[in-house]
Amino acid sequence: MVTAASAPASDLYHGTVVDAETGTPLRDAAVVILWKKRPLVAMDGGEYFHEVHEAVTDADGRFAIPASRGVDWNPLTYVKPVPEIVVYAVGHAPLAASTAVARGFESSADVDAALRRGTTIRLPMLTAAEKGKFTSLGILSIGRETPHSGIANLLRLIDRQRELEKSAPRMEPVRD
Image (cartoon, rainbow, N blue to C red; front, side, top):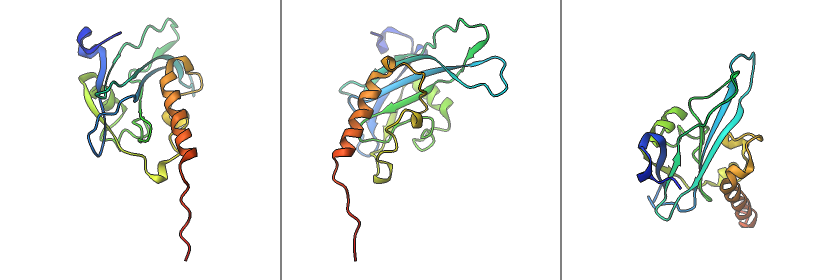
């Protein structure tokens, strides 16, 4: 197991995940670092899975994940310099490429740099309008080709969020 004490800070993504309103550490949040690659020459070439690392926050909301993107042995592709980063906690709006600016970052590259230095990720509670929005991998920028074994904790939390949303009482519309 890699810990913050056993690797240089630049070789780790590390930080703390907290509730945005209360500052309470979020235990059992999934943090996913997904590296993608692209062909060197392509007209409209897509991105492909390369490597994934996942961690779960401890009781204090802390996590550490290796920042290594691994080796791309294919001479006709390159690994994108900035990975997809997802931080997901049940009942909270996630940090993902589509929400980075709303969480106080300028871009995905800003998230990457902040996590290499070590930062606090503040996740707001889901609003009523957001319920059901973040229960698919696509909205989190995680493609179908990503091995589920590499994101098992994220999948577990998404399933838990779906269960909670099914069992939550539905608000009836107000009638005059």
